[in-house]
Image 1 (cartoon, rainbow, N blue to C red):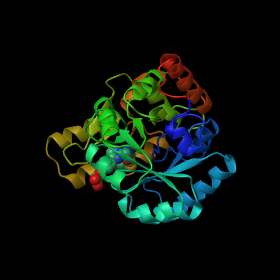
Image 2 (tube, rainbow, N blue to C red):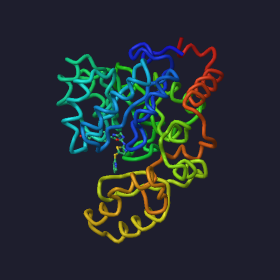
Image 3 (spheres, rainbow, N blue to C red):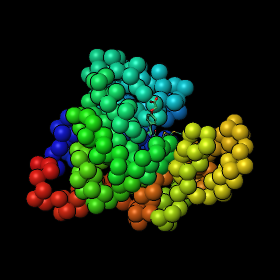
Length: 312
Ligand code: TUI
């Protein structure tokens, strides 16, 4: 399956693993890259030294290209931006902000830059800054989200720019991959599907929650504070949403989620922790290896798209 994205990144399949906080560490990233996709280390709120160690550890596990996702709201974003340039990673993706101020440094380091966008306006602006491609991420995604659905965002971003677009949000199987291609995408990014893999160093209870999740089991906290985050419903989301509806102020609400993602991912506290996941959790039925996930996505999508001429 050759597309503009596979050619640009030197990967076998146009499948990217999302840069999920606490989940996307070097084991997962290397496993996805070894499977022929693009693995990402999620820098999230981690200090720059941790990111450097993760990059070096991933390089020991794979010779294939992998990337780092930089969460731009992180207090360490600036330092992490320098570390990826120093360590010479192939690809940087960014989320939760505008990466313009780092572009010159990354381009000088020969890095492919692929920001995540949730709107056409930012897509156009970043294209003018010289980014290589974009991830258009719909509100079906887990974690920090925008407002538009994948179905309407992807074709509008595709129409607005002439660089390749990777679709994200709500994709967990070959049907989703094929649909994304029909919308004009040249690749797909999946997060939730890769949490439920053997290689994801994530508490078993977290993985079980994803397997058990039904269509309506995600909730969005923080809509009123301007920090909408999608996760699986539990005691934390019930309490948060109750307080949010009462108009409790932002700082108090934030306190409820501090450290909550780590508690869920590392300690398996899936009741009071923050179990970030996308709406596609309802589509994830079994734990597979990353290689099985990638190969299944590609073969299912290929069967649906045979003869369309959408990729080589
Ligand atoms: O970044 C994400 N998803 C994330 S980051 C994250 S870390 C976190 N941990 C605990 C609590 C809250 C967050 C978890 N999930 N996705 C990429 C993404 N970026 N989605 C939406 C955007 C986005 C939004 C606005 C990108 C740019 C943007 O523009 C703002 C601007 O400055 O123009």
